[in-house]
Image (tube, rainbow, N blue to C red; front, side, top):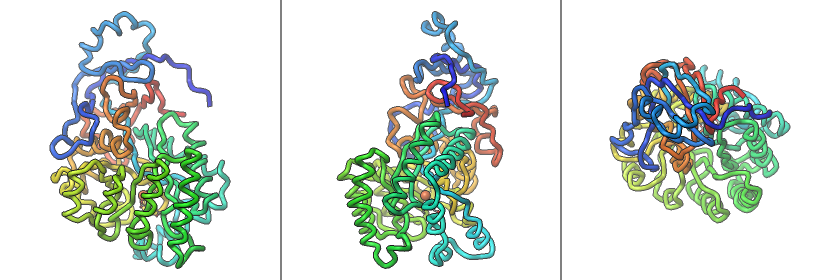
Length: 426
Ligand code: NIG
Ligand code: FE
């Protein structure tokens, strides 16, 4: 689709509340997670896809650059709404063919997620659909999800493969991501999740499958630059700590970053995984006290995914308070996937973080912007509205930023700016 012809210069005017999230390009911890850089009555100027200036409107309008270039600047009237950095969804699984309605009804009737998976449902039941699907169809599905995310305020998305589980089908999934990303204005960060579960044909031979992932899939994906990260599901019913470490070692050897799904259903000691300096460890529902202390000392971000707890009907949610209060860096993401969290909505996740994890709206927004950028190691360009950073912003038609968390299942995002251009519909 041809890009719309818009000016490379954009002024966002009449902003009721601007959340700059300004500060060090590093994970926000403890009390710093509440510092969202609120400016009332603000404006932002963008040039060449970057933030030129952001602050009180009367100062911005008096700026010498704007005064002498005003005629070539396109103006976006934010009508007193709230503007914040584009939300960053740092954990999604959008490459699948069909929703998992059978599992959904089984769970409603009382079966558990792990029980369904052990009986051949779960992740494995999405594999047949992906293996059968053409890359073009998968890429359409990814694009539909990316557009739904953009509609609700998201401008950066981490996207995992993980329902192919053969060399060809994992490559096909990553190619589908690449195709969709070319047609989407935001930034897509692709991740290889071939170690999602041991595929049926390797039942009882998990180590052989791990060898295939390490010796064939990771090298090929790295060579073809199809992913920036490698993820592994380290939990009961998926991969052991030792297998997960092998996958991390192979990824590092091929220049790829690492991340892991861990402590979703069963506790694990995080020390050995943290030795590999993963960008993030995700879920963390049953993280242990000693490991929280380790996280507080390092750069690895704990990505919390309350959409999965909500959709699985769990009473317990990740203990965000304990992590934050101990100084661990915390981010939020949707975990968009057909089994545990079929939502593209970061505002809904922000709302869940407040109502079920007792994060304040300010903390949840910082976790969905600057800390999510850190989870993808994009904090030098994304996640805050400092001059020189990418001009990615979401405009919400609310007067107070806390309303983003307050109204739930109600899309209040009315405009997106991506790389300095209005971009809500593609
Ligand atoms: O993050 N836990 C592993 N992976 C996904 C679930 C994937 C699925 O059920 O299809 C998750 O929850
Ligand atoms: Fe996940």
